[in-house]
Length: 302
Image (cartoon, rainbow, N blue to C red):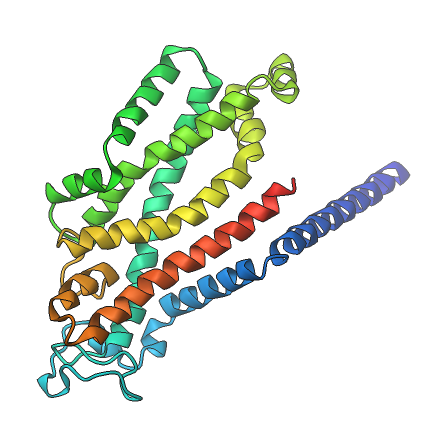
């Protein structure tokens, strides 16, 4: 019985030590991150945008204006205390539509990155680990084919053969984005392939899956997370470009790119209509870029 008691006490001490190490690691990460004031601004802005996404119905001054709404009496009103970003040609509040536009922008970011990051990272890991084999050649050459075509041209070409809507726009962006993660992960995996800790794992009989996802992947998470954060802004920009030419979300969906396209016809007379969604796109890109710089600084110290 005493032996069991000692074992339980040892387990408690071990768990307590493990929690202490995790707390210390979190404090170290936060210390590195907060050294840059711009990174804190980026984190705050992303948090604010997420708040807009989740509570758009309560934050938007006129939530009903995000859908099918027409009131020609209020059309073309310039910015005022009643309508901070003015109103559009149908009398809809531009600020309310921009706030709901953040929801579609984050939906685009979430779906695209959740598709391309796992696909690109897994293929990159496999190609780098099996360096010099036919597996690497097939994966890398296929990636080169996609990368050789300008990404915006490829995205527009894919979107043009599909029905114009926001989900096909997401698919178009996803199909042109994954090779970049293959290239990044393949490059890092190749450099780590003959490191002592990989050779030791192989000598101990570790499985390929263990080596790929427990040895190689954790040692490049910093680079991958930094790229994911920086790419979030680019995903919104490419999605806006697709919507701008009419191949993305269709009116009256409050998509930022669609709004810029729709409202640009009224420039320069009603400049405030285009200004709202354009500022929304800039805010998203700036926020994620600043946040990405902070994440890069965190892992740069490892």
